Amino acid sequence: MHPVRVQAQAVRVVSSTWARDSHDLFDFEATDLHRKTFTALKPAVCVRTGTDVQMLSDALAAPRVNNMCDPLLRLAQKDGSFWVDRAPPQGSSKKLWLVVRDMPNGAHHLQQGDVIKLGRFKFRVRQLEGTGEMQPELRLDDSGAVCRVNLDGEKELANTLCRICLLEGPSEGDPLIAPCLCKGSIEYVHLGCLRHWIRGRLNLSDSSGGSYFFRPLPCELCKAAYPTYVQNEADPLQPMPLVEVPWTRPPFIVLENMVRDSQQHACRGLHVISLAEKVLKLGRGHESDVRIADVSISRCHAMIRFHQGHFQLEDNNSKFGTLVAMKKPRLLEPGQGVSIQMGRTVLSLSAQTDLEAADAPAPLRHGTSSGAADERQLRLALLNRGSGGARPDGWGTEYPGDAAQLPREADE
Ligand SMILES: [Zn+2]
Ligand SMILES: [Zn+2]
Image (cartoon, rainbow, N blue to C red; front, side, top):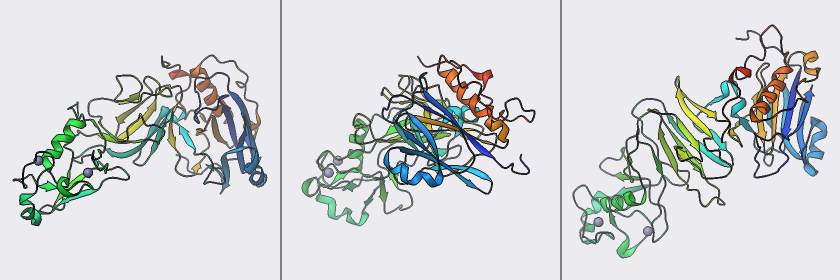
C-alpha cells in the first residue's frame, strides 16, 4: 500500500479521563470527561495526576513519575517512526488496553493468546479453530494433569473396592483409577462411576453446535482437582477427557475465565462455543452465550463472529468498553489512529506527517456532546482532524465508522 513509509513528524494525542476512579474502568457513556489535546514532537511519557494528564519529555519523566503521578504510556521514536509502549518502569506501570470500538471497522481480529477485557472481567483466548476435526483442549493453566491407568495392575486391584459403587475390581473397558490424593479404602474409583458423578455435577446439556462451559471439579473429600485426561497405557497417544464432553462443531472458540480471588461468584473454567450457527454474544442479558452477571457488563456487551476466516471481536456500544491487551510496542502508522485505555483514561493517538496540520486547533474540541455516540465521534474526529481533515489524499478514511455508521443503538 505505502511503497515508501512516510516519516511521522509528530503525534497527536487526545486524552479523555473519567472523573470517577472505579475498578480501573472508563465510562464510554460519560459526557463530563476531562479532555486534553497534545502534539508530541519527540519521545515523551504520558502521566496522570488526579484527572489531569500531562506529556513529559522522556528525560524529565523518570524522577517525577515515581512520586506524584501515575505513568500512563511511553511514546518512543525509532527510525523516523513513533511507537507506543508501556511507561517506565514497565513492571509496575499500567497495562495498555486497545479500545475495540475505535479500531478500523470497529473490530479486532482475535488471535490465540489474546487477553480481552469486558468491564472488569478478563478472558484469555485459549483456542480458535476455523475448520477441521480438532476438538477443544480442556486445559487450564494449573490443571491438565493426566491420570494413568495401569493395566498391569489390574490383577492386583481385583479385590479393591470402588468408592462409589462399592463393587470389587475393574471390569471390561471400565478400569479402576486413582484420580485424586485420597488413599486407603477410598483411593480407587471406576472410571465409569466417576464420569457418571461428574456428569451430574456439570450440566453439559446438548446445545446447538456442541457449546458448553467446562470447569475442573475437585474431589469432595481431599479437594484435589480431578485430572483433565485419562491415559490408557494400551493407547498412550490418545488420552481421553475424563469428562465426557459433546463434540463441538467448528468454527469454535475456547475462552478462559480469568477469575481473581475477589470474584468468588464467578467460576473458573472454559467457555467452549461453536460459531457454526450463530454469532457469540457476551453480556449480562439472559440471551448471552457467555453470561456475566456484573454491573460493569452491559446487557449485550460484545460479539464474536467468524467472518472470512477470522474470529472478529466487536464492541456493542457497551458502557465500560471492550478491550484487548496490547502485547508489544505498537507502531503508529500515519493515517491509522489508535485508542488505548489505561485505567480511567483513554488516549487516542495518531501519527502526523504534516506539522501544520498537527498544530492546527481541533475545531470539535469545545463542541457540546449529548451521548456516547457523539463522544466516540468526537474522539475519532480529533484523531482524524490532525491528519489533514479534508486533504485530498484520503487520510482519515481508515475509519469508515465515522458519520455513516453512527449512531448505533445504545445499550438499554
Ligand atoms: Zn464403581
Ligand atoms: Zn480425593
